[in-house]
Length: 261
Image: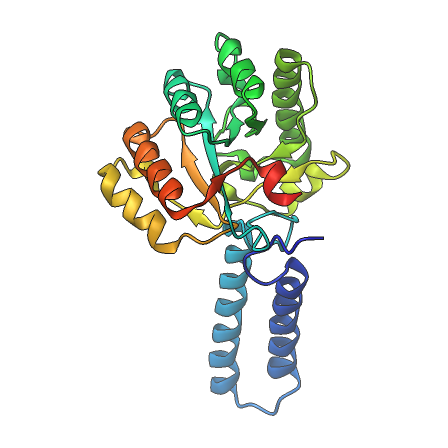
C-alpha cells in the first residue's frame, strides 16, 4: 500500500493526543505541586489539549478521526489537481484547458448544483476526469450537524450524482476539509475514499492569478494533491499558467484514482 499521508499517520496523531491527555492528568493529580503550580500546569495542559483537538478537526491531514488521502510520494512524476464546489459555467472552461494540455483532474461536486448542469458532469467523466461528492449544499453548519443529518446529506448528493452518471462514485471530500467525530460516525459503513490535499492554493481569496501560482509552485513536489475551486474568480488564467508550469517540469496531471493506484 502506498504511503498516502503527507504528515504523520492518523494513528500516530491519535497517540500524540492521548499521550498529552494522560501526561497532563498525571501531572495534575499525581505530581506533588503547590496550588499555584497546579493551576498554571492545568491551564497549559488544557490549552495544549484544546489546540490539538481543534487541529485534529480543522486539518484534513491529521487523520485523527477519518483516514484521508493527502498525497502519494511514490508517484514522483505525478500531480493531482482537484477542483471543489462545481459544477458551474466556469467548469466548462476548466475542462477545455485540461483537454488542451492533455491533463486529467478530479472534481468534487456540490449535489444541489448538478441539476441543469448534467451535461458538464457527463463530459467530466467521459474525458477521464474523476468525479466525487462534496456534500449536498456545502452548508457552513455541515461539520456541526448530527451524524444522521450528515449521512443523509452525503447520501442525497451521492444519489443525485449517480443518477446522472449511471456509475458509482466512491470519493468524498468533506466541506472545508473538516473532520470530527460526527463526520466519522456519518461515514461509517459508506465505504467512501476521503480526499484531502497536500497543497491548499487559497484561490478563493480572489487574488491575482500570478500570486496564487507562486504560492502553489513554491511548495509543489511529485505526488502532491492540489486544492483548487471551479468558482474562483481567476481560476482560468491560474489553471493555464499552472498547467504550463507542470508540463515544463515534466509532471503528469492525473486523477486521484491514478495517483493512489
